[in-house]
Length: 66
Image (cartoon, rainbow, N blue to C red; front, side, top):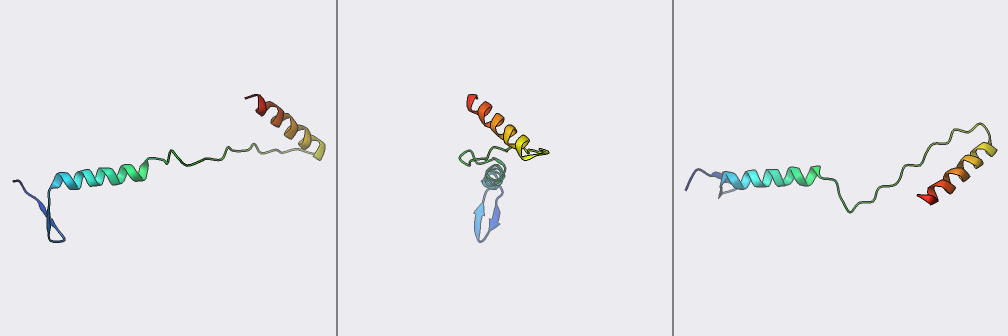
């Protein structure tokens, strides 16, 4: 048998450490596929309440189509 590290009194082969490190990095980096992401809402910068209402109605009507 080849060289091994002594960790907490146990003999651990280097390839186990490599697999554990790669697995830990992948688990931390990959995004959660089951998590939900909120769709970003467009920021409305209207000069009046009527204009804001028109833009909101326009966006809601056209988002229903898609």
